[in-house]
Length: 247
DNA sequence: CGTGTTTGACCAGCGC
DNA sequence: GCGCTGGTCAAACACG
Image 1 (cartoon, rainbow, N blue to C red):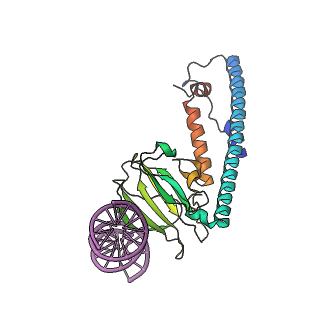
Image 2: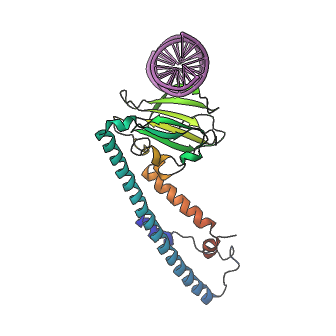
């Protein structure tokens, strides 16, 4: 990130006066305007840098908390085997996590290495393939009672002995969302670019929101962050007007 | 020919 | 015991 900061100013294309007739034509005015824009640019860079720093710290805190929670849950499951058979609530038709507001609730058995992920896809995309870095072999497909969309069953084929399975099904409420349920822990090193959720490192409850960073690898998370920041800045009329790229 | 997908059959668990 | 449902198997098939 540090390298890109210094390039920001140098790589900026020179101002095209013909394209910006509202800019001052006088040479001294132009110099003053240039200085002002540079100052503004510096200020914005500082703000952006501060925002990124805060975001980075926040991200580190989130990952640290997730790691602690995961460790705590694993310790609990190991120290108290009965916990594994204690019931927890899982939403049926309703995708929310507030128990009393769900239309249909069912009791399920707590499994320490079950991870649920929601992945946003195109509505028109008919297949149930979710790219998470691992290699999966489809071994079955079923239409379930509470959802008209078929559920696909996959086994991890990255290693022959890997016990991990996953189920992929479109959300009953929003067909553009794929609900992926990972079951088990991989017994082999992850391939490059495998997501945290697919690795089983983030437990069920923390991985349920669509398009959350937890569903991405760290690299793609940073890319996502940059894209979102760029998008936000591009939408900000005061920022675009300062740059002279606005409408 | 090897690998992956599709799909009907089969099995186990559960509620009645 | 019976029916329903979700999960798995395995033969047939498609594809490179």
